[in-house]
Image (cartoon, rainbow, N blue to C red; front, side):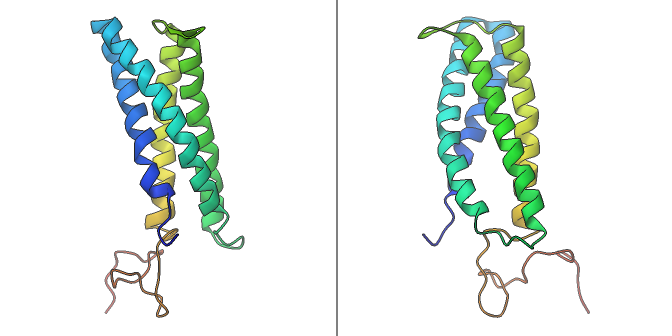
Length: 160
């Protein structure tokens, strides 16, 4: 596949989990309709994240072992697993058998923690792409397909 799959999939769990966190906060004011919506979004986000993380792991295998991006990629992986775990635990605390129930304080706190971890995960992913050029295709002259020099420590600086 010419285009990495991870960047195309990542939007689904990010959107689901962000909206689930918003719905959790809304449930404090609007009750059952909001927490039921949050529970469904947590489920869809958790399933979508499994495919997203599998695709991301395949991308991780393509990063050179001696490159500076590998350290950031490993942190990104760790934070993604923490994010998934927090949201999955929040979902499990809401389930009694197959029935979804109102979240307790711990489930809401895990959702909030999951959102913070999600933000850090996204920031690290952005660092991989925009600073280290992970997943950016270059031609033989070392330029990106858009015709710009590849990202690096001097990205965005003008040269005379």
